[in-house]
Image 1: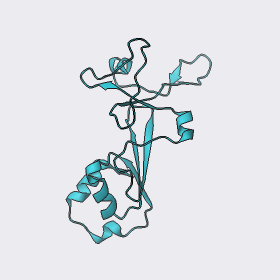
Image 2: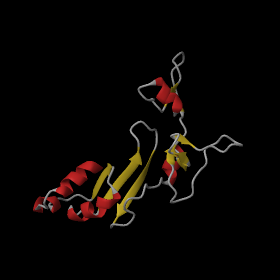
Image 3: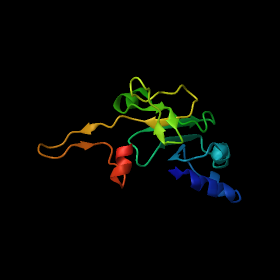
Image 4: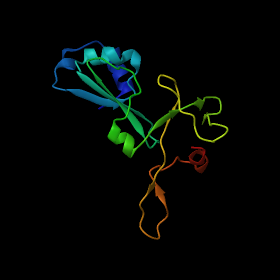
Length: 151
């Protein structure tokens, strides 16, 4: 696995023969920036990259399975099974208010078309809990109650 900043640090140094002396078929991680993706994948002789997109405090992600240098830098998609289990949506987002943009008539978030920036969201689901226990969800929350309520 990798974290994108580590890839950038590796590329800042001189190439070494050891970078290509491996039997890796795929590198999986997150945060690989589009401007270094091609250089990293070729320099380290990686046939495939599995880049996931999500947030540590979130409850959803998408995956970009990049083979043979196609699709580099994309946020990725969900396969049909993951979409059934954990649907995600990319919606309009107001960077000034740091809030999703909602339809004034329905109150629902507004989906964006492909290749338009937005924010990844997913429904928060209730989890089964034993009788007498408080309700639990698949979103653990932030460190402050205010930040959790905002999301």
